[in-house]
Amino acid sequence: KINKIIHPIIDDLVLDRINDKKDLYNLFVIDAALIIESGIFEKHQKSGAKLILLIADEDLRLKRALSRDNLTKQTIKDRIQLQMEDKKKIKYSNYVIENNSTKLELFKKIDQIIEKIYD
Image (cartoon, helix red, strand yellow):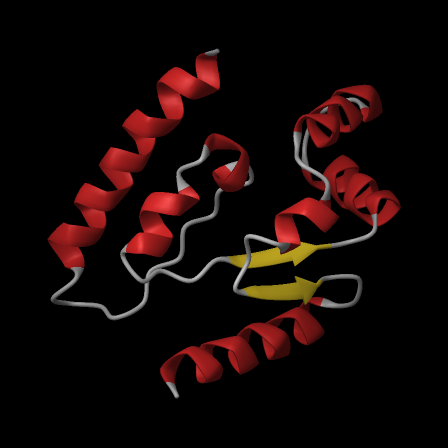
């Protein structure tokens, strides 16, 4: 219930900030784990935005979150369960990046997608 109230408000704020800066920049990245679940992605895709989905094996996601966040293993698992399965998210995505390797490999994949977008 909270997400349904807060997500549209946050999205409006994000879009306002993008509109304020669109003359200065030609690329914006929105990091939003629940963008598909919230339905907000539809508004962005209608405007021409591309949805890039990063996926990783669940064990690796858990390991990364444990090392990064000050959360319990169960809390992280609970949050993962709130998210739609990757298989379902792929249907809505313009690009999919498998992030099961190093940061360097991730950055290479991101660069390749940015090149495709600008071609």
